[in-house]
Image (tube, rainbow, N blue to C red):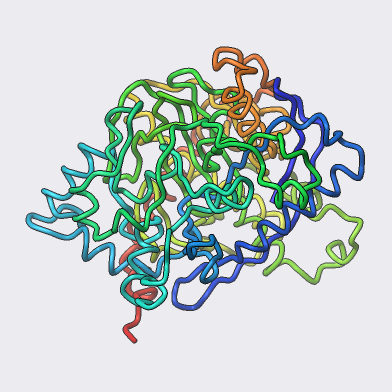
Length: 510
């Protein structure tokens, strides 16, 4: 959890970070404790105020950008009835597939159902079960008593907003991954009775809806006391991470593209129309900016691949035993000494399956073409390149979706702090990469911009000039042929091994 104090013009005054525990269960579950989210926000806010980073009297608004496609079942008092199911949780897969299946199936979707989803919502639920729809269907079918006891199913930010201001609502941009809203008129998004009936979700268990960038009201007294803020501070509706990051990247004009290399990864841009590519799990959904659509997609594992390599494979080396050492800098220096292409070592980053451009939760990662000459540096560079190959795989379909060449891409997220990774992305994508200043804070900056818009302190047209570019990386033409060849083999690895992954990782019946 990252908390920041940001001016209405996007200047970051300072911030705090709080770690979160994540429980990955053997049956495909992925859970977190909602109360731990709230406690982390309280601790970080108090710490920031105690340090004098900002005065409590200067705070005019609070806005949350959170993980998307998470589900918090609550009772009438707003108390969570269990731990939250988050975006990595795939236990609802078979229930989503059952709901989506029908006459004349196409890629697992019944034709009539698919056309209705595309026409009304602009997309369709992932068959992996990782959307909010999958979570609710899982609870409905496998935990019926808890399901019956649930008053509302809330997204993570919507539950946190309830803690802040006491309102159980969701916003037009957030609710879309339930796949039960008509998104054709951005000024009046609403639950559609046909989609509710088709999915089996009851309207009474879903929150009321407000437009994106809505002021929900002031902090309720209990929250104000906990945070050390005034009860006059206004709570804004917030936005999911992908949507807030799009705003915080500064790429808010139509077809201006940003790439996020965080725990997961995505490549996105605002567009003036509703469109979907269900075969590659991408489509335009309501944006965090009122009246705008945003091309959305997601790749499951990006920065987490490097963290996994560091924490689970490379531990035990003497350099990693000193707390004062920046472990990522150590690994990056080793990777810098390895030639482009990592001597043909290829890393597949599908550690938790994949969403875009293929929807397959059974894919898995690993190194291919390892030899006795492979070093730690080779493995680190191969991870950086493997994530970049995956970005290019997605980028191929993004450009087809947009219908034009996208020459420049802004990069954000933790991975964007690495100069080496930025250059690798430029070389593999063969596009100019613009490194946004303070890229890790793009979500927070986007949330601040959205709040400033809602509170009347900013216009959308002002945003691009308020997000500085730290560095620009041009593709190295010397690496073009090599990376083209390795990218083709990367895609071949998927094609040749997807059946093996499906057999090895099939869901075992109880």
